[in-house]
Length: 150
Image 1 (spheres, rainbow, N blue to C red):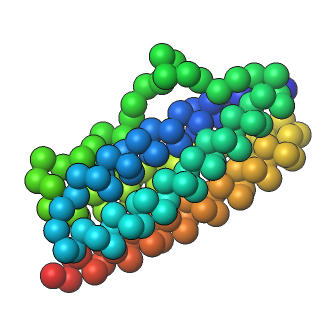
Image 2 (image 1 turned 180 degrees about the vertical axis):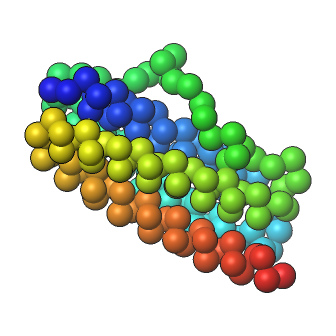
C-alpha cells in the first residue's frame, strides 16, 4: 500500500477530529438569535464529520495502519477558533468555509493518490466524503451571502 495514501488518510482523520472539536465549541459559544441556525447546522455536521473520521480510521485499520492519537495531532484550523465576540457569527461561517475548502483539497489529493496506488476502495471513500464536504461548503457559502446582505 502507498505510504502517501496512509499519510493522507491519517491527516484526513486528524482534520475530521479537529473539525468535530471546533464545530462543537462554536455551537456552544455562539450567542444571539442570528446564531441559532448556524449552531443547529454545526451540531448536525458534527455527527457527519465524526462518521467521516470513523470511516477513515476503519480504512486505515484495513490497510494495517492506524489512525493518529491526540499526541500525534497538530491543530491547523486557526480561522475556525471560537471568536472573542460570541455574536461574531460571520467569523465562524468564514472559518467553516476555510475548513471545508482545506478538506476538499485534501480529499482531492487522496483521490489522486489512491488512484495512483490502484486502491479503488480508498478512492471511493474519498469521493463520498468529498461530496459531503462540498455540500457543507455550499451550505455555509449560502449562510455567508445572507449575513453579508445585512
